[in-house]
Image (tube, rainbow over all chains, first blue to last red):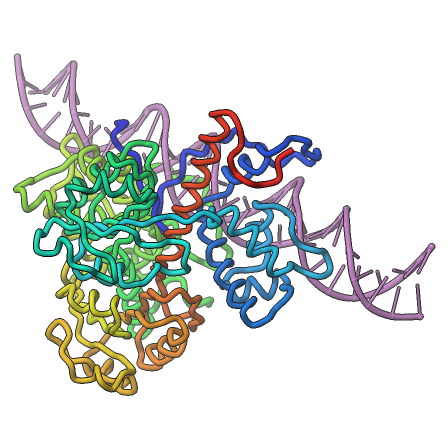
Amino acid sequence: MAAQRGQRNGVGGDTPPAPTAAEVTTPIPRVAEVPAARERARAIPEAAVARLAVYLRVLSAMQEQGAGTVSSEELATAAGVNSAKLRKDLSYIGSYGTRGVGYEVAVLIEEIERILGLTRKHSVAVVGIGNLGHALANYGGFPGRGFPVSALFDVDPDLVGVPVGGLPVDHIDDISRVCAEREVSIGVIATPPPAAQTVCDRLVEAGVQCILNFAPVVLQVPDHVEVRKVDLAVELQVLSFHVARRADDAAATNGQQVNGMVVS
Amino acid sequence: MAAQRGQRNGVGGDTPPAPTAAEVTTPIPRVAEVPAARERARAIPEAAVARLAVYLRVLSAMQEQGAGTVSSEELATAAGVNSAKLRKDLSYIGSYGTRGVGYEVAVLIEEIERILGLTRKHSVAVVGIGNLGHALANYGGFPGRGFPVSALFDVDPDLVGVPVGGLPVDHIDDISRVCAEREVSIGVIATPPPAAQTVCDRLVEAGVQCILNFAPVVLQVPDHVEVRKVDLAVELQVLSFHVARRADDAAATNGQQVNGMVVS
DNA sequence: CTGACTTTGTGCACGCGTTCACAAGCGGTA
DNA sequence: TACCGCTTGTGAACGCGTGCACAAAGTCAG
């Protein structure tokens, strides 16, 4: 039963274990030192972390346009959330706004980057240089920079040594050595489904603790490894569900009387 | 059963005083037959829908291996969730299990496919034939079949007419006509960020009601359009957050702070 | 037919995340 | 300095999803 240690997905992920030890709600001014920041970081809901990344992108765009400050309302609209949620999210990382004015763009960018750990570079390894692997390797420094692709792997001997996106492919058997040498901290699995679990195990063995999985497979990993999943099939099927639901609604509204629709 | 209670009649939230198990049939009989399925479908939480897609994949694999029935425990383990959640999820679509035995694989597959709307084919259009667009077009029938890629679009005139994955690229100006002709129901945006909103608007104008967005942009769409987002940058940054958190933890437990923040 | 065993289906409670609403705080103005 | 309007930060309530635990319901052996 301890076998399952679910993956987190952007949308339907499992609820994290939630240590519950952090009681951040104390109005008492903390005299504590650094742990405050760490405790605070731990307490940020996963969903909020994902949104912080979005805020960061919006803020960067605003900064390029020369904006000095933003109100929560502006930023929220640009990020597609409501302002209350935005302020709550920002409150998780601290109080960097000025009441009556708003937030200083530069400050906010800096703080979010700090919390997200973007001050450090995170080397990425892509495993499986097929269609998707190619696309990922060619992304060039990966989106948003700070995530240099520094290793590519495949099983195909014909592919080994061939440069893809300016980086030569290594054989998967060298994964452990290469990952250690180049200090890879994030592994991206873009292999066919059957190979995914094996690749995952090898990555873990190589010391990689964060994995982004594109293969439509439920990966089994130790507790200390973080997995996020991007599953095209699931995304499409969820959309399909909505198409179907919508079609049903339309059929019902057009043809027959609908249950809850009409307030008679 | 309980699923029917989720009717959205004006004032929501008031849970009826829990009728005894005997009288759960026919809550408010107005149009007895079809609405049940539709109402039930509407009541399924989004997270559960995503998981149903995962169950479906696992079930298909099991069927190929000749399995006739599964228990909730087996299926749950294979899908990476706990059995209670799995049964709850399945209960949203009806009661297709046999107590003391389990679920018939074939039946479950059929029912999930029905709920997800996979009995119909959903034509997919991919807009933006860059690295990612290529990869998507070459996926070949798209993952899990039932989602044929039937249109490709790009702005680049040099690309128009060139076959990618066996399908010639159309110019984006023809999007409305082509989408209508080929009855596209799902649009996939794989363009650079600046083009995404425009492309989105055109897709919506062309009658596409479901969009899968790979561009790191918050799309503005009318209420009746469903958008799902796949954001690599966000995924990586969330992983980065966990790396950082983990590093902080390690540093703290070891002894001293490594991070260059304000330490007192 | 009866009784023991297995597995489903679900009522219920708990906890997390979202939303609301307002006090606190800051800048501008007279 | 005192006041006013604006925006942040957050306590508290709400709602939803998750997990638990058990009754209902079926199978199988004798």
